[in-house]
Image (cartoon, rainbow over all chains, first blue to last red; front, top):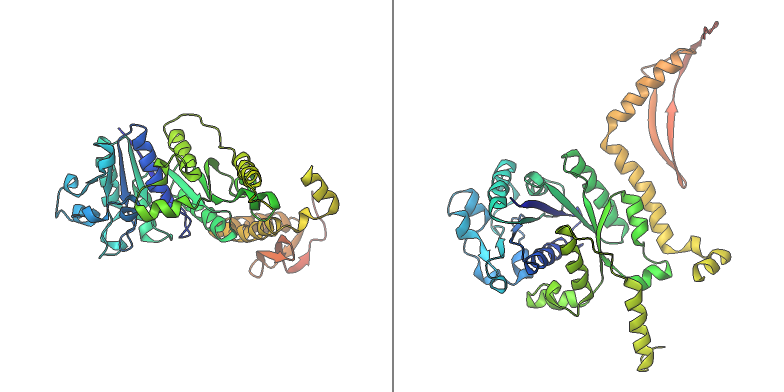
Length: 266
Length: 90
């Protein structure tokens, strides 16, 4: 029996879909059987981040409306034999096309066949959010070190607690160590202190994410990517392994040292 | 060491990170309190019980709210007194 995890944030654009794609791919790379569910009906994006957009035939609404069997709608990621699947959102319907009960039933069915069911939640706190969390047993909250994102994360944490999900775990995305050092960006401790939740991982800002999204190949598979490394660590933590936080500062220094060495520095 | 120097020079306080934290702290006091108006209501009832031991108050006109003043958040209670109790029996 698998585990159903919902990836939330409240605010849009902080990296929910990127996080979902990378954690899911990371878990599959660790040998786990994973299904990713896109619940952002009307604004689906998980398919393009994973590079699976050309293979969609049926979607989540087709499944709940009985137009197809669940197995027919699951798209297999060929990079991982039979371990990574996507259940895409519908693009032409809206959030009311699915009910909370239908999501509960869907999650209960999926977790019988998969080790991890990871749900990509839409931004906002309306029906789409309620559907996304309906069948979840565990929740992750993604935020960035900005006032608006942390504020929305706090609201989401309150709503997750009200829905009686166990304590959410925090992922701090797009942190920029150099700015933190200058005192121009909130650091990890500041955000944990304000939100009072457990930390699951910290993902540094990384231009490689843009490149990987362009290609439809999650950064977690790129051994050179710093964000990819952070996502590999997060995936391992989700399997129960204890992995220390990656040292953000050391690499920063290494880069500037190399730059100086080659004469690019100031 | 760098942080220590910044502290000495008083620069630490003015970093934009600290401005962000302070603004967040205030906005969250409000956001979080808005989620549970019933807590304010329960507090109001408890206050009426306690104060009524000492004086007669206008329960209808009593107001309790959170207010934002400069850089702090305060619980503000406006409690009209109708009559003082002459012989308070502790």
